[in-house]
Length: 471
Image (cartoon, rainbow, N blue to C red; front, side, top):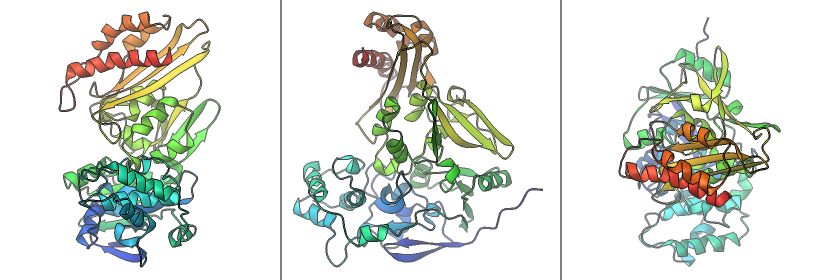
């Protein structure tokens, strides 16, 4: 007999700028941004509403890649209110303590603000980086846009801060924080939000509520909540399940938990898969990578998802679990159509396994990924591509993978061209011989980001670029 899940309660608490805050009977799909602004915390601004501009940035207490408490910058416009239960949130109003915070003082000294609309978001991104000792580069503000001051004075403020010692009550308090998430069952405005902490609980919930929507970082689902004010009768959050946030590594493969934030993957797997490193660098911005997950990026089955081409090129497989057991299949067999996957009712994406071994007889592996968009970071790709070529000692191709996003209804491999390459020498002549076939391999659509013909040109030209960089 199926065990019934505990009935959800109608309120929860979280900590906001050091004060315990009660939420009662509010929709769990209300965004944190809207909650803050409705309650007078208007320093957090609403700009784009889709995680691109950074004006809504706040800091939450989370975990770094080694499980230690850390201040993390996130886009409050993409965070459902239910996900904040039990967490600690800090906004621009909460960082001064009788005097300007060092981040605020640096922005004033360097004249880093004019109209001021974007400034609180920059402040909170730098606030998190200040205590994470990551102000030495521009990654901490890559997700923040400024249209009047220009970036030079803001960058100078970050450089000034990098010389300071972040030793104050915020750093002292961080030591005692407990970022582990507790289980919650909450209902508000006729919507239910569940955050189990055990995988078995999540599978039980999914069996009891087969119509429920799964959510982890909500960086994709959050767009529906922010832009379209879409509501979901039942949400099951996976971000509290430790079993889905592990990395297991052997000599032969790496298995990545589906709910592990991308920023953690960046840190823990850096240098193992060059194409993954490259794509993660261009994947949105730090605020998004602190929330986004690998399972979410493949589970949405978006044809322009950044990571699927990389995983396809690396012959990754996906592990799916349900209350009846688990199964694994190649990622190439996971995508069935536009926004359609092999995921069955009651199943959850558990992990993605990436083999580390190269083809038998090969002496060298060449691998890289590319993302073409209107701007470098924090943008949707026009075309994404990932390539893997294994060579023998005579520089002949033993194994080839050419994977693309943005050119079909699903992320897809150019299988016919892969087969044409096997046994051929790794030369410019070989590459150029397959370029005409690559140009016609897919029938992409034209849209505001690029024409179909432009995308076709990118499909073939990116492969030539790959050869030039790795010849």
